[in-house]
Image (cartoon, rainbow, N blue to C red):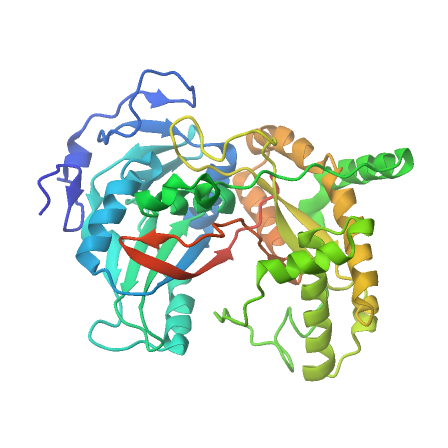
Length: 439
């Protein structure tokens, strides 16, 4: 048992120190509130945003937790004791990692600091054996179905001491209520060894690119479409059945974790540079590569002509709704949620011409970047929550989560070598399993 009263090595009960502490005033998000937010104070409460509360309700009411799983493959095994000590020292400075989420339909919701049960949050898998990549993937699949104890902070860490391919693995499972992908990557960067933090390029999150200049006609078109999208997106119809979306000749109908061949960032940048005159971005190249892969899958494995699925297969992706200079953490040092969905059809009919695909994708993305839908939705969401029954809002979220065939996520990470607890990290993978929420 830890000597720290805010830590325990057994499951917390009603007699735990956290339960014995009187509730403290609810803190807002003011930068200068005179509170040391790195200090663990049992019972201290911090307000949860509307987005965070809805993500929590989606879990608490519908039993559909939204989890982000980060897999770190290490070159060696630092040992569970060293990992536990290192990670605890760093995440315990972040309030949401030592707080449970409390929800109330009438009064909203908040994070309340509680006793952190070390035994619950840190686990070991495959002790005494070498774990294969296939076993690792199956384990990740099972993690996505794990229930999260809502009376505890919504995160876990699993250590796999030995892999068949060499080294070890650390898996972080973090509930989306704690924060979105951008801010949680910033948290993961907080965990790297102090020596790696000396290089600002190693631990910085890249700023969102400026929206490209469009003609007056295109800006007007983007504005009008954005207004419609901001008001109606949760009501959109889902993609019709296709080999990727539903059970059938090729569909598996269940969650599968897999890791394919890696594409080096420098190769993607080289392709973008070749089309510099058309202002093709790295994201345009990545989306075109995805489109080509989907078209090839349909053609080679499902005996389906990709052109016949034109505008019938859509992809949805997260859009960071923060302002360009807005920090990825709030004034408490916590990650938070500030995202929306962008939805676009894949240009499958152009799968034989990579350049045409990129130009079509660029045109769609440029319109999305100029769309007011995200700011409009973010502004109206608090009023919708106050005036709409919660079950209906959750149904709309569920529909939004299933509109598109494919959900993709692209979050920045360090390009230089970094280490965790003295062990160099050789592979970083992040798997999102998101609820459907607009803003």
